[in-house]
Image (cartoon, rainbow, N blue to C red; front, side, top):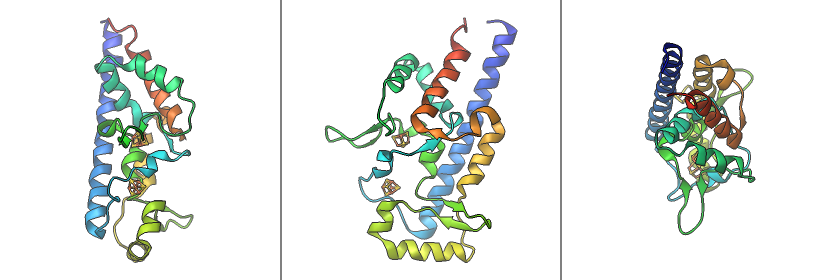
Length: 198
Ligand code: SF4
Ligand code: SF4
């Protein structure tokens, strides 16, 4: 591999490591949120992976695409996501008694934050973005958590994580697109970086 190609690969790999660090921080923050407010997902629920309007950045799926490159499945996954014509995430599975995410350890940033983090309103006030399932199942608990957060209770802020992410790559990390498009673009980036590697 030439020096230039080695440098490009090294930059890519360092970027992937930094994305993984942000994702690990998101995991830690949502875990702390669950403990702090004694709330968690409903048992065997993966309803949010069925949503048809999940948006994400290509950048947050670079670690996933890298993982598939390393396991020799990148082209297969690219084909799969390219031919996937449903709005739901290509990695969600709800059949044959299976449910949920097929790529859980390498899922995106939004997948890690969703349900246990807050959005900011136009005045910069944090507002708990609870999922529909928890709102329906335990409205009182959700109301209490909202009140605690209104009164200064700690909460991860989704936009803070995305701001950090976009600092790593304004091109791939700034724009939210439908999740399958984000996954496909991440696969393309890894493919372009690795196609002529040897
Ligand atoms: S965040 Fe809500 S919809 Fe998603 S798995 Fe948890 S309980 Fe279910
Ligand atoms: S990557 Fe996994 S967790 Fe994220 S939306 Fe798709 S199926 Fe759900």
